[in-house]
Image 1 (spheres, rainbow, N blue to C red):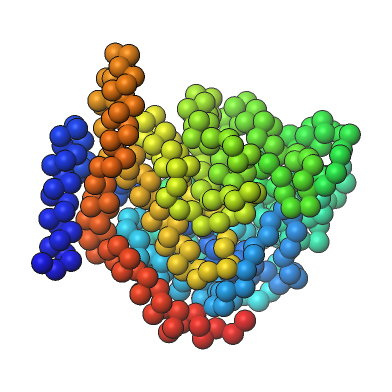
Image 2 (cartoon, helix red, strand yellow):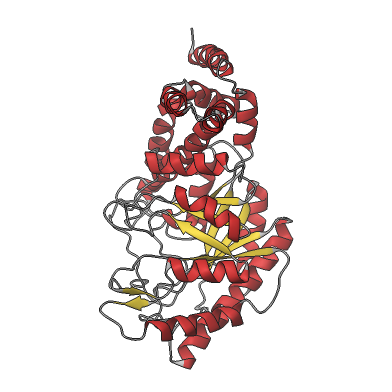
Length: 420
């Protein structure tokens, strides 16, 4: 029996096993096929971008590692993303930071960027069957410092307000071009390394800046606001905290972004989903894997990722939650990092979609808590991996560990030949 026949046989057995607990596997696969992951462009080059304004650095982020072969220009980054797409199933999105514009070697400052610098991306994405999402970029700039949109210095603050306005306008044009809303995320690193006595002042300034940025209404883009627990060298105080953005998002009906690395490690991000769904229009996820701090390790199929996916599916909120990745591991093969993270995220959602939720809900409604717990435990051992292998086979991509050799070959033929 060859591998294809083995996968198909295992899938048929799995289908029967899931049917016994009331789960329609084919329906789960159809739903999984439609779940788009917004792939972050910055894993390919360690958050370097294509500006000509000097080296990035600071602002609460840090890529660690020096694995050879990172993308050095826009063509290499696009080639790497294209390779990734051959190793993952489904139709996905590409998430761009503003610093990844097609600047043609010119030094375009961030308050001067416009749609012309992203037309090439729009056309390329259309050719590859991708939709685009977008981000402002406040870090790694001479005017970044410790404070951007919350800076009392009017000149610096207005620089970043203008940058953010231009990013929204670019996102609007992306949405028009692709006939699908572009999700634009606004994150700033603003904060203080040590004790501050002006917490309220900076948050008042940030609120005013956001009001000015969001004054123009658009139809083809959606605004997201992202909190963070702390940034490197800004550990004591974060202006744009979760409480701040949750309040602002609920008040202004903006999408709140939940980055799984931006909270205390003991916090459950999954538990936040149902609350945000009650008070904000939608949710944006940035899925990564924090280890002791916001270290942006590659997403894996761990309890945190699985719990997050299950909560979204249990809440029937797949149409209100946008799923993106946000990690930048420079210590391993970058194409491999992409593929492991995307596949892990999809596996988490597959497990969620295969959960015998109808029976679980019935047990819970009847107060049958032993039965609920028992079925939750038994569901962990159901043959979801056989369904996953079939999903890959059905999409004509590498099954199981077969993608490892494909990535090794790409490294041998492409990335290993790049000079640092």
